[in-house]
Length: 398
Image (cartoon, rainbow, N blue to C red; front, side, top):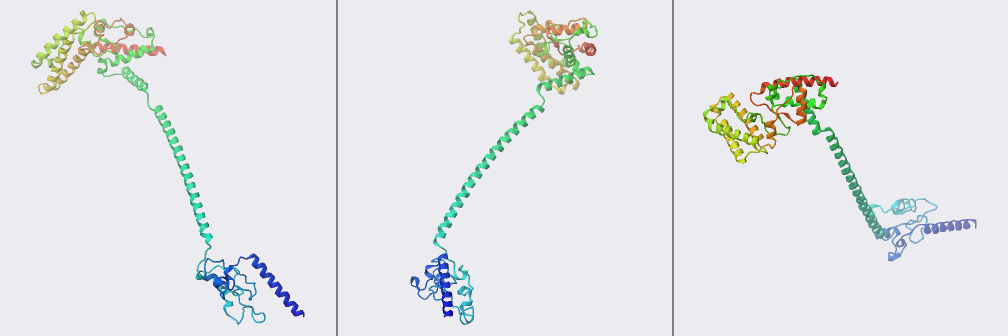
């Protein structure tokens, strides 16, 4: 009686366990014996035969008599491994008591997939692709914004570079001031004779004296009247040189241009220039007839061409002398077209001292013009006097 009661308790416990397991674990409906017409197939066999039709899950704790249990009946009195020693019950894949409670479909039985898995996988792929797309769009926007910021930074740096370059680059006035200082330094020392007779050194000292002012504080240096007569004056903006025109326009030709091959052009040019100077002095407005200026220019051009083409007939020194004199004649012809030429012809350097000469030139707004041939000595004498006066006035300013 006691043994029967004990057996009944065990059976009830086992049945309760099966019920709980079946309530918690999903079971493939085709694993039940005879389900869907498969009759004597075990649940595992039916699940393998129809991949995708079930999850293939069974409980190893159900009784062997329960339909669909793939596990063989246990032997309570012989061995825990099933009937008859090593049979199918010993292979975990075929449902022995040590088989895993969940079947994972080994590869040699084929893969099974739930139909919902494909749908969910597709949705996941679309979602991933959409996220990547918008991520790339935002990344492109960020890259474009970075490029814009870089372009703004580049523009700013370009402006800074241009500003720095403009600060470093010397201004026009700086270049002019540097040239003036260079000319003054040269004039204060021993400039070339060409700078003196051209008036360049004299004008450099003249400008320095004008800037210092208060000429009465300078040394008292007298000037010879004969020296001043041979000094030419003109406006700083004057074109040409009136030095050759002061003696009534009478030209003093060098020997190199006294050759017979130059007679025709030389004679006409001398006569026409004298006529032009007379017309300037006698005309109320100091003008020359255009026809006369045209004839003068034509004869001058013919002389220049003959000198250039006849260099084989002249020595090197004669050729250089002839070209130099013709350049001075060309400057004189240019001054004939200047509206202020009458004023320049009637103006002469005046002053008993250097200070008086400087004051008169300042009042009339005149500078030194280039020397005419033969006036070089007068220009050198005036240069030495003006240099001494500028040095003394500079010391008096300190």
